[in-house]
Image: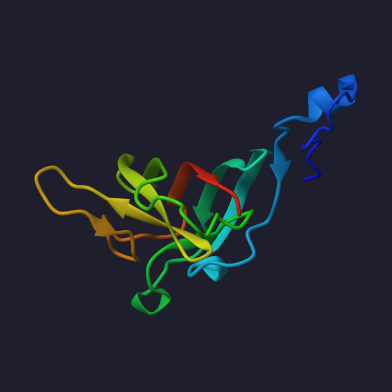
Length: 151
């Protein structure tokens, strides 16, 4: 996305520049451990200066296996690599189509991808993989939003 920033001192802002600040941009994630098993229904981000807000809606179109590893999906814009704080940067939920249950998850960045963690009541958190917090099958959904600083 072309950003209207930075503005130069004394410049006159146009309505087009003002209307473009933080516009949502659709994108196709470039990678992810389950990329062959998902349909990305929605991947959008908005960027204002170095602040990036991204949201995903993903539906499984095949059942992942132990060989697929943990769920991951690519960032639309590289994260700031210097003094960026680590830890939770967003959240969302997993929806089990078989039971109609939803499970809250936290999103975190590792390298250039997002991973998800599930925190069961009274237990340690676990990274989302093919059978945690439930056994994923075609039709299940993954939805989350994340906020982070761009490089």
